[in-house]
Length: 328
Image (cartoon, rainbow, N blue to C red; front, side, top):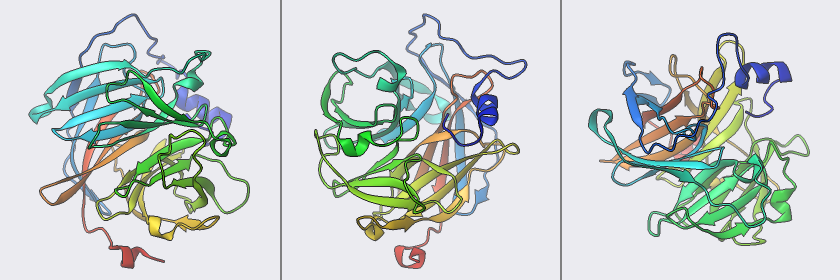
């Protein structure tokens, strides 16, 4: 969990609460996942219409902590946790889960083995080649991996990324249809313009590759926890806010890459919130189009706590403002 509130509240969020405890790892490499349906009535909040949701679980000791999500054809999902472990599966009708694979992201040579080297916060997948890009917050690098997660093909360790704070760095990433890539920091800033973000026109994992630097002003929506491209070229942003009641608030908004200028500030238009009782620590997002409808998938990070959940939710995006109406 990030530095969203004073230390006491963060301890309350990620630390042991009375009567609860961490789900400490055990030596279990089971390759199975179950999905339990969430009984929540269809409801609309803003432009989000809840369709269905699942609570995911597995005996695998590395399962959970999900901070990144990608949807692939054939109802296949890729989830990556901030512990550096990934989970792939297909979700069928009625919550049937099959084709499960759980494994570890490869590590670079001479790594010290610390969590920072596997703290994956965002993922993007090229549907044509299957190549995978991941953004790692602890070391503020962007990697390109092969489709089977067995090899790091390229690593960007540029000074532009390295200057971001260790615990508030690369948090969200969206690969646009034209090949450009947006990367948002969680809290890197040096003035009042907002948090830093980068727009890469080339491969963001190419060594030394630099992006166009701009700022994102969330206007009180919270900190960006993930991003996903929309079919019209805009980008959906997931914002996370911590409080006491409720503990988690997830605000969804749309930003237009056409407004990005070097050193400039961009803002977003809110489209809704995750409603009760589905609120949780959502950190991963993916958008899919099916039969002319646009759907948003969200996954939550349970921080490997017994009292939190790994939720996978599906919303239909309805009546979104067009780019002209959304423009300020």
